[in-house]
Length: 217
Ligand SMILES: [Ca+2]
Image (spheres, rainbow, N blue to C red):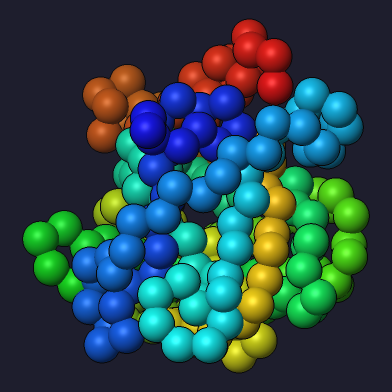
């Protein structure tokens, strides 16, 4: 199978949460199904369906990795302060959604930061647009520092946890996701960095938006 597509991006691959021992290696690769219809725009609008099985072992938690290139980089330099997405809680449990930024390269992350406050999505929510605020003041460091996690982010996760922490608890859940976008407000000094490709997040987001607009979503 080709990599999963997410919001018309052609390069997004999603994986499960880290191992139970806390190491960053995925314990299982899951190809989350790409449902062809029933997204926010209705018939013919595709979306991703993320699932968690509850219990124990692989797939028990709702904690989905997105390590695609367009989500890596320096969020501070790019001025990305919020991430918005359409979500639909298709399961029976209320979900406490958070984002996690981390910087694993060859080993466990040295820095990881999660959103301090959850976005609560009730069971049977229907499609809802939610926004995660991700400025440093909105995040809590799980390991290392918030600023370091945002400066060299190599992974971003969507996860469910009522308590502010990671790894999250098991849950039985089905979550539809679509139309993820980042809001960037580059400061003048960072525009130079954008030109060098160092602070590519905003540029990539812009590219994704253009790509999205050019495709039937
Ligand atoms: Ca869609």
